[in-house]
Length: 383
Image 1 (tube, rainbow, N blue to C red):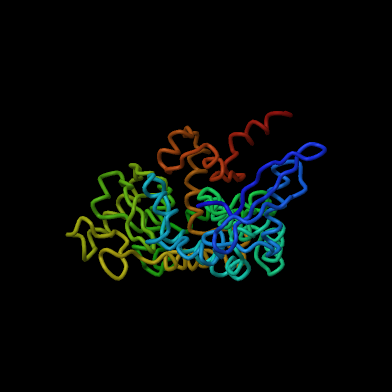
Image 2 (cartoon, one colour):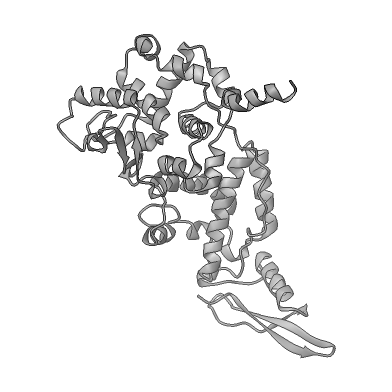
């Protein structure tokens, strides 16, 4: 693909000036025009401005609209970017792709769909970013949408469809990440009292066990959903699958396959629900099955049952939301408990499937109950 113009210098009376030769609507080179600029970069900026003003008739791929360019983006079976990532062994999920496609359709195309790809400029990207914020989207969501646009334009530049990425220098908005909290040890004990399963979990032993398993192993929700009967061994679970709504069973996030030991109580509960399962004879049947042996309980159902159980131990919806307690909080609970207990971070990452020290830190939320050793020393400092 040829760029819609070429730039070259000509000698002038006081040095040199850069000229630009555009292409006409048939793709032929037009008469060179002086940009009056003495540097190539400035001449290129001038050329892009001329294109943006509509003063140059473009042709072919140079005349492609953003809507035409974006037609296959994040469409699972057609997107070249997805195909390339998968061929390179990199992770990308169907649900992730579907969400990014919705960003394109709902927030990017309404503004840029009819724009010529080669004529997009940084100022309009910055105005669009601020309009999304003014329309009520959170800074974090605006940043996610901007990331999609930046990626698309970067790929267009790499394919030589545009000479530069007009979104490259557009900054991200300041966003405060929503803090995810964890329950206290006392609250967890209340939640998992064997003699209160009927009162707290409405007698649902399978749901009780699902949350007990996540609390005591740090499994991701998708890993819990995809847990098969054959993955449960004596004293451990083998985390080799994860469930994704669009893709079904796949490898765990970041290919973090691992063996996680089970505490005796969790092991006994798992053994019981497997023994009572109508699908127990099928090693590939799901432990936490839903409508069929090969489809899991819905994430929304798993979350709703937890929130109802929390209500029954005195944590209402307003309090839960304020504290940021969600199903994923079990991973934070597990990570924090192990760190507070002195387990080396390297071992913790082996169990959680985290890849970096930063993630271990992110999933740590020490509370007063985790500082008993420090408090004991503090008590002695001024005596």
